Length: 230
Image (cartoon, rainbow, N blue to C red; front, top):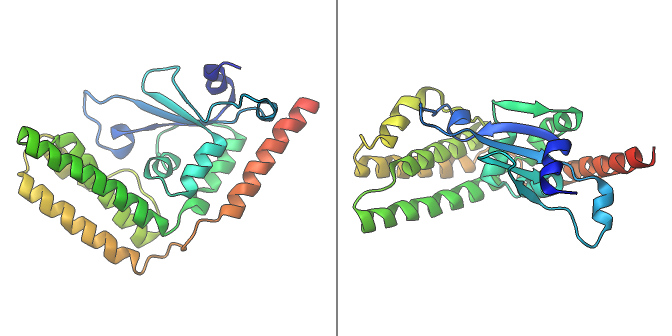
């Protein structure tokens, strides 16, 4: 089965991510599409397994096979968790609705480590840009601030909110390079400290509900087999 046909014929959930989902879109913003497909179970019986992800067929489109998506979500991968909470859903079927109903099962205090580690890596890249070019990539600085806000708030509330709301204007000021780097750096440091503090009394569980997610995956695989035999 061609990879693109897996996306075209077996997608259970598709959404828009990036600036449009975050409430940070401007006239020149791309439309980043993300999705989840379920490879028919018989494909796993072959030596050559179905792909874990597929780029395309449209520009700026990327999809994960359900099992890979769940694995990454259970590890609290920031991009995957945010994909599950996009306010801009373009397609969802019955299986996709079950996946969305499991959003809480993926959330745990592990987000503190994964979001913070990702943020630290991005901050080092920004600092390297300053050393090399004399200024950071301001768009990346804006998105790092947004990520830190998201990490802090999910640890505080137990809920992952994607849209930046009333932080749109100050974040876009950063993107335009209107905020001096020392001020942006101070903002990042403050958010990181607030995130650490939030982690100490977060309502989130210590671990995700792996068994609940695995039960869902097994049911989906079994349903795919039953559909073939029926």
